[in-house]
Image 1 (tube, one colour):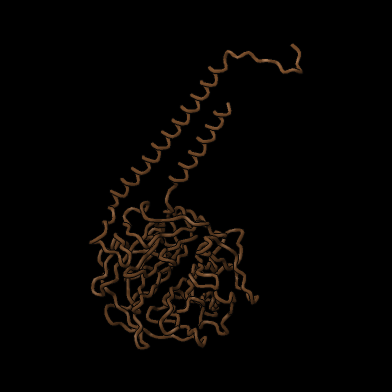
Image 2 (image 1 turned 90 degrees about the horizontal axis):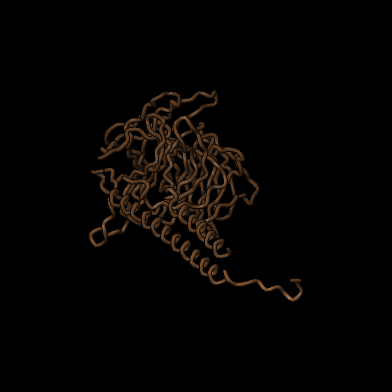
Length: 425
């Protein structure tokens, strides 16, 4: 009987192992999430999942390995890894990578929270693979929830994080673990904006909506760039000219990413009418803003192979020669579960690609990345092998258990029990 119990326990362990190895990849449809690049991985966390009629707050947190080739045509075969969940369910927050005395950390600020709302700041240690609450040591606090979807940026040292919310600039010194509030407010409240840190130590706020003191709301013209000087804590505005194409139409819910050469890539956005069954996308969906010698200039290059004419509430990052765009929402409010990649290596030929190759990867001397069909077949084949192996293992365990049981049964079936010396016959 003990052998049978042992076999049953082993079977349970094997079944749990099967479930563990065959869990689905983190490819739920989502928007309004946060993301950051650290240690050659794209980390994604939180957001809204579910269908258009649902607003499901999530706390999941996962990463995409950017050191290996992959195809975006099959989301379930991409090199995702699930990490410990965020300590709060939220959307519209920002994830920012910074360097602390203990090492690299991804910080979470603001957003809209479900109960319990938790603390204003959380940190994910790359070394410990764990989240923790972050409390500024100098006693300065910021609101737990933000008033809009926010975007945080760091300076060149990766020590200071700048988060703008409701015209207030919050500065978190990750190295000293201190929070500061800039003395001067922005000239107006700005929401659903995009922002990047320029090489001049200025933060450029591009697009979005603004609200004045009389609560009047308007979209900000895309040729009006709001600047924050991080060195002297002052605000200013600059007008952008057009070098090629047109000034992009005003927008909210878009993204901005800056390349090492100073090109700022704007992607997506809409007119801001959340009540429309089909929102009006901003034109063009892809635009480039450059900042040279103190002057901004717009261009509207053609994007070859463009997949979506409309995308909002996504995130984007520059990695190598790629602009990586993650998740978001489409024209009819449906959320997406795709990663899209734009090759930005050639200024005269911006194109969407479905095959990601890491920087330094030599495709001519290395094995080519598998096609989606072969990856899918390989994945299915691997699953079949795992299941077949487990079934065979379970069967073997059952046979061994039964064999031991019958051997024991037949060996002792004719034995007559002998009473102990203290018992009566």
